[in-house]
Image (cartoon, rainbow, N blue to C red; front, side, top):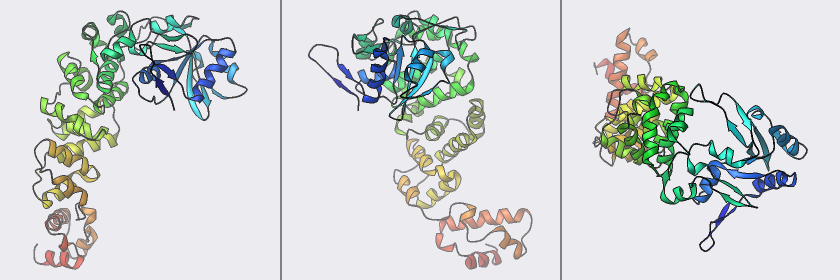
Length: 402
């Protein structure tokens, strides 16, 4: 387990997991430099445990692969771009050669990558100062752009000239808002200004990449400030078109479960399911994500004041009912008790729950559209009184004309 040992008046000393440290030692023994970089270092300095670890090295990519090939499993799929993945104790660690990016004519990827033996060159091409630090046991923390101070100030600031950073790769605009939401950081004024000048570049970014960043933002700990900044800065339309939820919805997003369909459903609660589905398809989301978000949205509009109302919400939202009822409570459409009613429900809520089927109706002479109409009427009846959900009773109700 990694840890940070704080010393009086000095930078915290970073202790890496043994499986990561072993890789740095192999590279150093081979005469190369090896640094912990990127989000893993940032998270350690924030006192958090990283999800994964990235190393940067002076070794060219082919040499990196050769250094580890005898004792470790090496994956070379990123070799052309300078990255080798090494499995240490079964855990993947990406090791990338110090690099310099060429021009970005497509607004997303460098036209060419060249390798360098200077770690500062590598750090200077990164997006934000808090991601542009490097750590090596022999030399300590390398922080040429003031990332440590920005961590302390909880400030997100572009490395170098913001317009240049966002012109190179417009997806960094959404990364800025996503980091702001995840870390609870404020975006520095000049960086925000650069975003405003470069936001049109998002039109060149694949919708799938935009969606991935947007979902991470929505499911972050503090999405509201970032969403307001996107709205006020004119960035939101490049993500979701002409829709913008009211302030009350933005405020309540953080209280929904941090799951994409749940938060998307609440986020789009200011529109109808048809419009929401259209906007979600524009983000190239999966059918499951779109169906789930629309189910939450649909259920969130239900007024739930009784257990019978809860069953109707379940019928409308299906397996997403527990998310939908939470949204309904947040929007003031449901009593707080409704969450318990939905979660404890064992009454029929869908046609498949009925003790009778369309085949049974055909057998008693019901035909055509009347089959579906009759089944819906029976479902409504048993939702109000679950004890009626017995085949004999339902057939008797049909004979009596419901």
